[in-house]
Length: 453
Image (cartoon, rainbow, N blue to C red; front, top):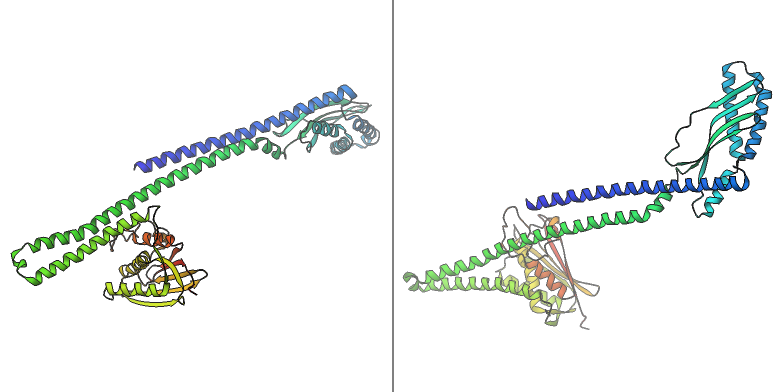
């Protein structure tokens, strides 16, 4: 329960942190965007003031001269053709369109701004907008308003440079000149890149720390459960022979048993058998502890791998009274490997024992060996219950045992396969496993070899 509360609290804090960082990213973006707009607004107005002061020009002189001639043409040639309000509306649209075209093609302010802003080492690849809000013809018969709109606030990514009002011989015009930065998000991104990297980096670091911390907590929990499981199994395994020996010892104290030679011998054999089993359990634990030490070294001898495997199989079948059918197939042609015979024998025997122990039918074991490159590849395959895929990645871990519901049908310390892997790697090799539940398991051990020739 405490672990779940800790996880919920940590996750909530993490989400809150991410939300704060996202808020900071948005604010940073807006701040950088506003700074860029203010920068271009300041530069453009400085440039316009400089142009007016030095050249007494606003960059629209040529456009205004052409527009004045166009207005004279409209007054002299087109006004007399107006008969209806529709004609007036059509003339207004035409005049507005042509005036805009004249101004766009003949204004010189944009080229000046691009040069001025470029010299200030800022991006000058921008668009400009001319918005005509008022256009009036000054005809002899009186003024004719062709366009008259209320000025609206420019878009969020547009800079209003200035509003111009020009009055000439044949027309009056009012228009707004703007710089359009709508498609310049890359400028904002470049400005805010370092801040974004720091913010995103902090988010990733927090997620990484959270993930590693939580993974470590889960790993500690798993190891704790494995440790508890190991202690329970070890207690059971040790108590069984001890209890048997205790009962047998009490049995020998009985008068009717002491006088019965057969009973005494039978009880003595039982005590001896259980003593051997108890000694094996203790030795297994001590050997694994010994394997963990850095000073662990193998007592290597050069032996023919096929002969050694045959001896191990024969010894195993003798010790278990032919408890399984074993098929042998060795194709190493007398090649030798430098191995510790005792540990190698125990490693193969563990696999054979597991093949018998975890089988719900008549055990059939196939032991084979082939040459693969510079290694001998030893295979031990059985027809047992198999191992579910989700457990294959853990079976070589110390104390790990594949769960079978709420109980383990087959007792053990969870050290056998750990022992196998540790010995294989100590020999400079490795071990792998494939398995299908209900169809059996195959272990492959690779050991470096040497040719005797």
